[in-house]
Length: 436
Image (cartoon, rainbow, N blue to C red; front, side, top):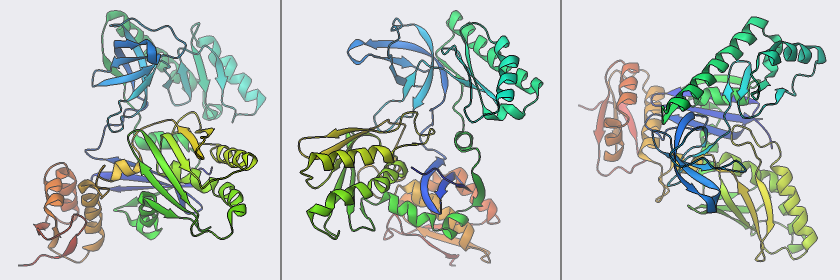
């Protein structure tokens, strides 16, 4: 599994898109869209327990802005009505609520406070023994009993006063949380979720970055066509195999069609092993999650099925930490020849973010924001531009997209005429000089 070696951050009215590329191939796409679903992953809340569900080993908690599902694990369940500190781990997706954990980590610039994990740890990326000993000698005595600390590799080059200030601020923040819990002050958010750029920067700190606006680099480097490919229901691989992706509320089904592949059934097991890396890359880029069922043509020999399952698990190694802490798990084969995979859910899939959930056409927001990027790119030299579009696009720009539309007008010199045509399809946009 390849992590990106380059990030392109594209800012345009109403939307920031961040593309992760490895050797020019799109590995990840993250979107921060005005009016989109709130991103809560990473948020720390004082939550109130509203219900305990022993049969699920879980509870439901009120975050103050909505409810979340809390996995209890091996910890003793808190009583209903109690206030507890939680971290939101998973954004809402469809009708699925956000998920939370009682493990709280307060991240600073150089260190991360772990109140429930009393271990003192230093990033494995920091190898120099002398530097590790210096950090331990400086910071460990400052920690209260029972509180852990993770020291990042960046701490090695920081001044002592910077490290002490960083740790002191985190300890003060945790003290405030405990005081609020004791006073019954909640539910409420005590630390907002990190913004998208901050999360990605923390996950890939050494990756080259390029700035873009209005989709210019996305167009130049053919990223838009790669996004279209990632949204396609049917995908043709170079070896002749075709993959069909169907997402439902309950699971994701991936059908493997060997109609275009060369060689007979004896060659199929090796073909399937060879395609596992491509399949894993598609699951990552499309942000598929939950139960994923891969329906292969029949592979009669158990040894061949075992090799395919092992290759699939290997393909998931080094799953990016920004997505989840645990890599996808290959559970094995069903009696009908379907390979079962579980992928921890972290939020909406790429399709759900960009497409209408039922009709599988681009959302009005997706079309409208692309139209604004086109206006910025294509109207140079036009004093009074006009855009002709469907009523749905115009309605979105006059409603949720009004701020983005205003920003675009400002960039165009203050004038933009929008004309609707009832004959236009949702994705049909015409841009040119204003007609009289």
